[in-house]
Image (cartoon, rainbow over all chains, first blue to last red; front, side, top):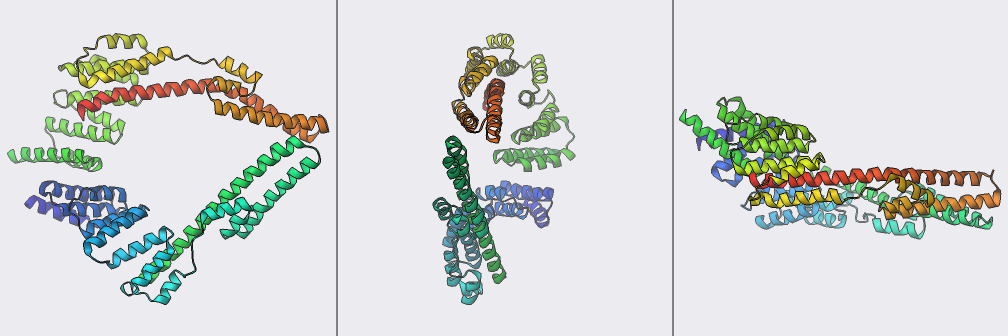
Amino acid sequence: MCLSGCFLTKAQSQDFTTGNDTVLAAALAYERMYFESGNDSFLLRKAYSYKQTGNYTEELRVLARINNPTFDLYYEKALAYFFLEEYESCQQELLRAQYIQGESTKNVVILRILSLIATRKWGEARQEMLTHNEMLGISAEEVDRIVPAKVKPKNTQRAYNLSLWMPGTGQMYAGHFGKGMVSGGIQAGLVGFNLYSFVKGYYFTGTLSGVALFYTFYLGGARYAMNLSEMNNEKKGNQISERFIGYIK
Amino acid sequence: MYARAQSFEQDMAFLQHLKEISAYDEGLFLIGQLQENTFAPGRRDTLNFYKGKFNYYKKNLAVSIASFDQVSSLSPFWPEAFIVARFQQAYSGDHQQAYDQLIRQDFDEAIFSELKLFELAGIDLLNRDFDSYSKHAAQYAGNFHQLSASQKRLDDVAGLFATNKSKSPLLAGVLSTVLPGAGKFYLGRVGEGAMTLITTGIFGVQAWEGYQKDGINSARFIIFASLFSGTYIANIWGSVLGVKILRNEFNDQMNETILVTMHVPIRLLFD
């Protein structure tokens, strides 16, 4: 018991420092207390040590060894999954945390909204903000400023399909009019080159070089449109998250 | 004095616990702390053994080998430390050092002697010394279930060397000269051969079209004929080089299989 007390003091004093060795020392001290007492709460503290250095994978590995289900356990798991960008797992752990608690706490709601924004479910995030606006301390007008009702993520598959239907339009849909014009122009030029080759009797050149180049640019342009719309979604998602965090501060 | 002994035993139990939960960084940190205050040779051996073991799990081979080699032959951990260190040397590519140290060493326990023979046979295959392999394999007692499957597997690998027919770079080059891509077909790379045939053909017919319509001095002919020639020559060279690449791939694959096979009984006996 005394030994555990000594380790506890040592670990606590080392909790709020950042050096790797210090974190290892704290983690080791908590592991030893768990080893000697079998008390799960030491594992939770050990997980906090790894969280402080941003080692969320190791944090999750420690949390996975805890058998006693508590709100803190599930919330910490959700947080770690969020930082590892595993949003589905994050939301599952939040549901467990909410089940244990019997209701949504402010931290759970905030994390759920952030994970919904990250997974492009902006409409659901907006609804969640409106449902819990009193808890979060934001008004309906402020929610409108954070996520306007009309803001929707670009459909990446639609951008791809549009570019297949009419080269360049996928990029325009993704919000890049100029890039769409350039892409459409290049592909129109290649079609012109094909036609010119056929008219002048260069059938092999028209078929093999012209068509091959057109096909390459055609598919490449469609994939580029898809990437552009994904980048656009990421940028908008980050902006929404930043506005949300700004308001709840 | 009694209290210290108790404490060291508790530390070792905790170290074993860290091993079981795969907390190797924490284990190494603890060993580092314990080494500062541990002076009894037997205990230092134990700590060096665990340091070697944890670094082995973390694939820090050089540190692991150095730590294992500091375990004295008086330690009960020594046979494991010695054999795992030699395997890691072979794994790092230092076959000769691993072989020389293994062959000089005798073990009291029959199973370690059998494991020594098995590891030596594995190193023989890594060195492609088939005569030495046969001599070592012939000395197997063959009555240890932890090794028997791996011994059979290593024998199968040795058989693969005998049945593997190497390809001729000359034939691959000649075939590619006659028909672009044919050298790749010969090497078993059908997709690559087909792509070469199509690409060379595409440039070839466009060069022919340029020649027919605009003559030998036309830019169209010069561009496509250059592309055709470049692709044609590069394909011949690629087929010749492909034989060497194929050999390297075969050798790498065999070495990987041999090392994995050498590792299996070590995991079975010591984990």
